[in-house]
Length: 407
Image (cartoon, rainbow, N blue to C red):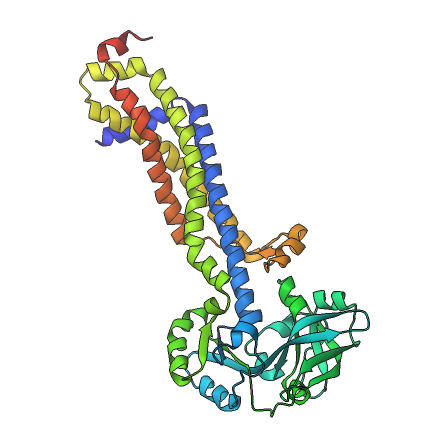
């Protein structure tokens, strides 16, 4: 049996140029598949990171029905006590109460609908990294009144700059239309243009005063955990701690992101399968040429007593050697390239605006894990075996007497 393995290995090098071309083709195909998958996985990881660290946090607590249309009346009256309870739950790293009102903001040049979010700056820093996304000015603090932080896209739309005033108009707790002037103290830019254009941040105390709230109420409680892996453990405890309230994790608050995570394995498998199936036809064509060139030789082997099963196995082994050598080389190169780019990042700045319109960062950190490598190696082996079947079958159909006369 070992002789057959050795013979198959030597046979593929009888025509070095052809074998190298096939191996390089397989290596390039596998490299492309692994790199594309790693790139997409890195983009998804970055998007999920933005959703959790900047937009949503790991968990949020609301009155049932609030998330449907941000109904101002659906408030939690005892928000401070809820915050204390949440802080006592295992794995909770930060808790912030928020007032959330959908209303209008206007400048001297334009006006638009936005989500007005009232936050306590110190608490908010523990559940959101928005303060690190500022490109101009400073974040909210506990002293300066009637300050607002807005996104770069919204600033461009309203045609305002730092220190300019905007007018926030809303319906207060008494159902009266009221408004107030707020000075722009900071401008932020995230990876999501829609978020930048649709959200503004003010101090919790200022928004309570403007909307005639008591200062102990909240529409939303954002909760950041020590890691995303802790969601499964922390959520049931919070649900138990807050009866009558709706506790949702980030996959429920952003269903499209949750779907990306659940469907990523299927996406990667399909991409790799399409590439390998395309390579399969090239390998089949090459091995058919090999069989046709060696008709006389195969006939001689059959004539001296080599069984058809051993002929079949030899052709299969040659095909597997070709595909696996190229496949493993492609995997090794792809892993090295992806590992390097995972450390330094790949800046696709040419498409920054296009990516930002969908909420993705132009700085991508490809993510290739060992599970992906192992799956790819197994798929390459399977494709190699599949590619060998037809050429090996053609070899079995040879008649020794007729084959010896060829050539």
